[in-house]
Image 1 (cartoon, rainbow, N blue to C red):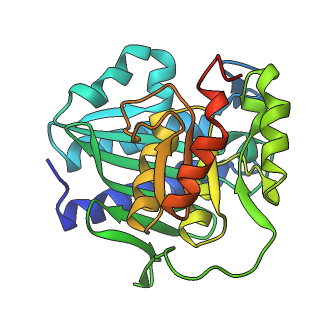
Image 2 (spheres, rainbow, N blue to C red; image 1 turned 180 degrees about the vertical axis):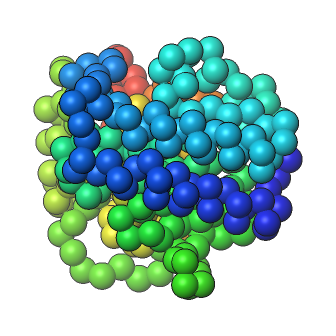
Image 3 (cartoon, helix red, strand yellow; image 1 turned 135 degrees about the vertical axis):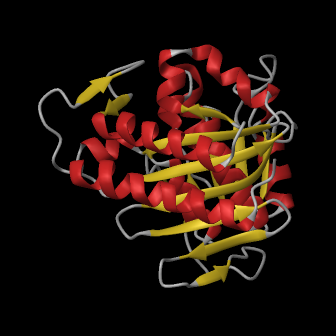
Length: 281
């Protein structure tokens, strides 16, 4: 099932409603016991994550009858749920609060990510900013668009001329194995200023707005990348794994890079081949 325009609108409204009722009231207002750690001390989950996912999951099942739903927090409780993306005819992938560390620390750089897959391919996505109440949406073959509640909907296109800048892009070297971090950083600093927003939603939004030559993903969790990868490709960008594979939301291993043009993707794959070839390292 590929969402109809009315179903797309309903999914966007479900995300907005969950943000209004469960996320924003808890921003800078998390009580005792409302924050917990998952895989490590910096991998946080809050009451807002869990409650927003419950609401969006219920809405997605009502809007797209028969669709499977894969939410980040549900997978944290039952890892087998992740397999549904590859087996379902239609699947909705949810990151209820992307950038949870920022959210929990009171930093207003977080978002909600939602992607719909059809037979394992992302066909629709939303990258929502609860603070400003606007979003980037993308349709497979239908472009990427920046929208707001007032009816603004501007097409995004990164294929045009670039403004002069020393800003190169986004990466989080600390997510790499320790022995790889220094070599990776030395490669990146040759290219200009690189930063880590700790939020895939805003990494991809900024890339879709044309701010950055590249963005690296060191962990391929589908709730972090399915929505953004589609949006960036539909905005004219290029997305692929360093080992030469195309990105798909069923992939959970490997290093991915998004770039403004095909030449930059090819160059980074060549220069960083050592990251995927033990003999080269």
